[in-house]
Amino acid sequence: MLFTVSGFSSYLLVPMDAEGQKDHLKAYGVTYWTLEKQLKVKWLLNYRGGSFLLPDIPEIQRECQIRGVSFEVISDAKTQEILELISSPSQNMEAVVLEKAPKIAVYSPKGNPPWDDAVTMVLTYAEIPYETIYDEEVLNDALVLYDWLHLHHEDFTGQYGKFYRTYKSAAWYIEEKQQSEALATKLGYDKVSEEKLAVARKINDYVVGGGFMFAMCSATDSFDIALAAEGVDICEPMFDGDASEPNYQSKLDFNKTFAFKDFILERNPNVYEFSSIDMTSKRQIPMTTDYFTLMDYSAKWDPIPTMLCQNHTALVKGFMGQTTAFAREHIKSNVLVMGENKTNGEAKYIHGIKGKGFFTFYGGHDPEDYTHKVGDPKTELELHPTSPGYRLILNNVLFPAAKKKKQKT
Image (cartoon, rainbow, N blue to C red; front, top):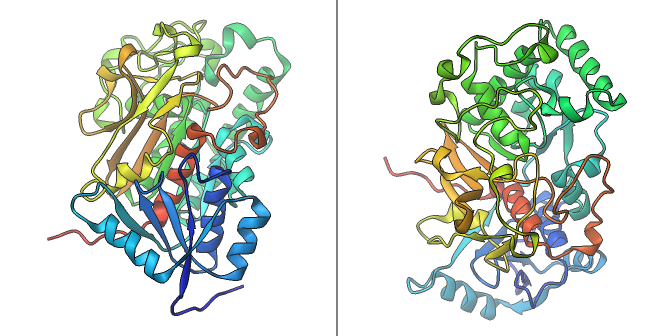
């Protein structure tokens, strides 16, 4: 179904502040749905929590009503008044045009349950379509078909998530290890670590070529570790059948990483940790006071981080994961820290540019499940329709839809 409308006498304002919206997450889905109909949307940065301005078409109103998304019908005159306010130099606001629904890929093993990944859960809840791809598709250059790629609790180092000590005798661990080894062999690699490095290199090329990559939990640090350790064996015998390379720490190349530098790898295979990047074991914060603060950027001069930080609150509940947050001293100087817990010296939400593309790393596993563990029940997002932590994920989903301003030459 295509809409061809040249002008509108009224518009739909989808408010995104705390008071005006009853289902923030599904509001992103309606916005995406509108873009799929080849209609443009304005994202009103810092206006009522980052509201969306949609054309007033009966089909869109009906879709909002079906999905339980709050909206306001406003006249053309009121719309112009809002846009003039936003354009005023005295206001830290901006109206960004969203042009096209980005095609989304989620990197995940075929048998992985969708509730084990916060992004697939929120995409499903918001009714935003996505496709699942894995190593074979990535190595066969399928990434060129997508505008946005998500990585979650993946281990790109070939150490099977460092679950060895606790789960080495568990049926699921043994099965996953066998499946990973069989896939590596099928794809022509002697070791899982070598195959995962090849995947990481393909993803690197995708971003450098102009792609958008969003990673959470252990996919963040293990991705950079794999790139830094290219050509260096950092795996112990229980992971790849032979000893690690002597003095491998000194052979890491931090020039190859996206976000992190100068980190120390965890050599002990019985320790559930990859490196000094992660703050999980260094945290002294009780759950009741575990929050991180979103940075405040200039919407007119820094629209990208402003877009990625849109929310109805600047204070967001913290949550744990294999990689919970990032040590500030290991973050490269050209990477933006968009969310942080200053008292603990950690960054939770970071963003950077790599070549022509962009990446965002978000620490933790599930924004509404504080200490998610293997086998825990899935989060029911129907109970958290206004989740600020999940909104950050959906900001990134819409980010590739934004109209890019031409750079001055």
